[in-house]
Image (cartoon, rainbow, N blue to C red; front, side, top):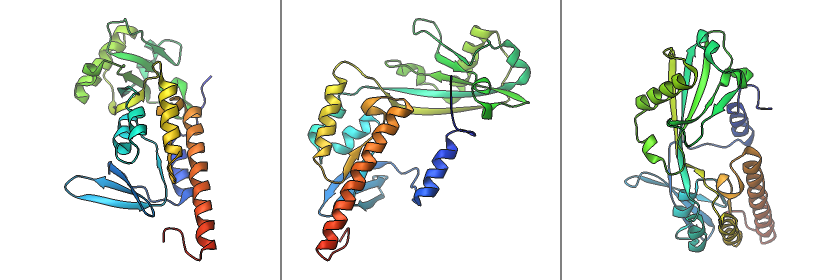
Length: 262
């Protein structure tokens, strides 16, 4: 039923970075986007020590709140459309439990928890059963998902409290109380778009406004779905749009005796 890459998707990201020969800039928030005569300028980093990157073209693959903020100056109508997409925050709690604890797990790849249940988590994934690369002879990996739309209070806890809540819910559902060998918590603030009535209309306005701006494209879960196929579809469309623009601009520069970016 489930499929992934051997070793997980981290290998795909690494391969794409290596194959594209790009230089990732990690840990630098993008704070601003502005038009320039040659293309676009991005403002990165802190407000006290900003950095600037001039680009011929930009693909924005960011959550709706970031889209709203970045498009506010260059494309106000697109920014307003992005502001109509509500988002939910979430966290994933990873538990590495002693292998003996696996005997207490249901014979499935995980469980979904109804919103009406008096629990903090919304799902458990028994990663070692779901994915071959997550299996171990020493531990059983369990992943808890926390955070629903309108439940920000659940995530207003530190990492230790989220781990305790996940363990308590796991004990309630399965009876497993074994202490984990290791834990990890990953958070995504505002990372899950909510597709309310009117979403398609808002996205249509957003895409139409962006389409009128040369060298700019949008992609990601904000548009047409959170699943990988939907995100890949928007990324492919954005890449084709940008490549087409750069090719046409390069041809025009060559015909005029100039160079791209000059």
